[in-house]
Image 1: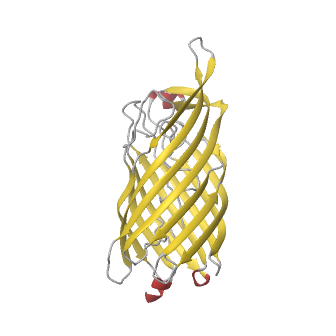
Image 2 (image 1 turned 60 degrees about the vertical axis):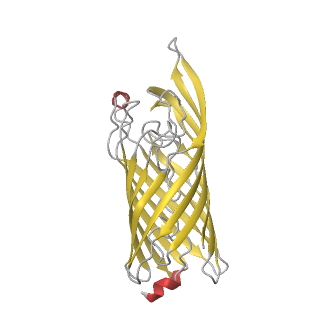
Length: 323
């Protein structure tokens, strides 16, 4: 396994969720038509690798998303049914990862914590007091729900194949008002068991990574709404050059496999959602002789074949460093 230690470990602890998007309180998965995850945005480089060197790694990310549901389609939000939704969301997330000291071998372990800040503008078409449709807007900005993984395990199948496994948890720590269209928090727990896989080709310069997970939501007691189980899969292909630049593509698929559970969801035939997305990726990485590294990545995803979810073109920028 000694050859593994020379592989590019920069940002290698993708942690499947450094960019896991817990978007807009009342604009969320199923209830509100979006979720903790946005198409193609969950996977990060080296999703299957936990590097062997112990210590802290840090990441700062920004995600922008402007999505909508057309006015001819219904969606549940704020305890009501809206004809058409629009959301403009900005999310900044600071993540700390600690890689635990282990002996030389095939296993490495880590823990992570993400503290996000969210700004969301929401516009909905609701029924007015006279039965007419009115457009209602709302905004929210504050700390978002904390996201953490107490324990992540990584297994090195070989020098070029790696797998990571972890349970990621969103806690309802942010402010929430059931009467608001936009909220900093979602008022539900979310558990996301995840498995990442990375295969390195061409002496480590060509990376293929994949991520599979499902999102399980607790019931929102304030609205008596429970989102159905959501499965998701992401893939990433990146070619890196000697100059430090890398280029490639990312793709994502989100599929809700259970109906939502509430009176509103019953009126909408369960409101199961689905989306696909694909787009380009650009990266830059630099590593110093002392082991320090700095990595920057940019991603743009175009969503298509969307049902019962927001549809838009999310993009992200992430900076990670290790010392």
